[in-house]
Length: 205
Image: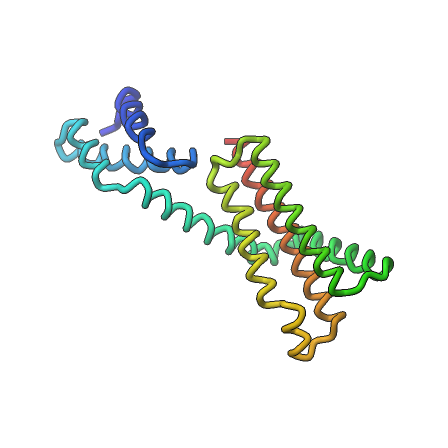
């Protein structure tokens, strides 16, 4: 049995009282509860009873957490999957080439250059966050998950490719710098592209 607009509005108003911060998750929860309510009504229940039972079956906070975890895991997978996207790969190589040329031409010491790149990445993520603030996108879980995931991969990456650790393993400073440059370039391009794609989805929705 299909819910009418008044019934859907009743569900929406009740669910608005829950502690769901993100608007897209609010919509997902509404769809979930509405679908469960319709199913119970098909079994012979009246709307109020069906909605009451459907609402009792879901924990809004847990629902939001489950969606957020799934969204972040999906974004992390997307970062690594984007390695095979030709445009992202090419842009990453071009950015890495520019950085290598700049550092070589400026005569920067490699440890300092790596710190400079890390700082630049942090600035980029900060700009994406500011962009989200300006466009009021912080209430969309997919946008937030995009730069959260980039942050997480960034810190995990630098545990693995730590300068001192790689030196002890026998890598030269030049090789470590090249690895860092390629990694940061890829993460910058991939994270930025993923965030912009989510923003564009909202514009076309």
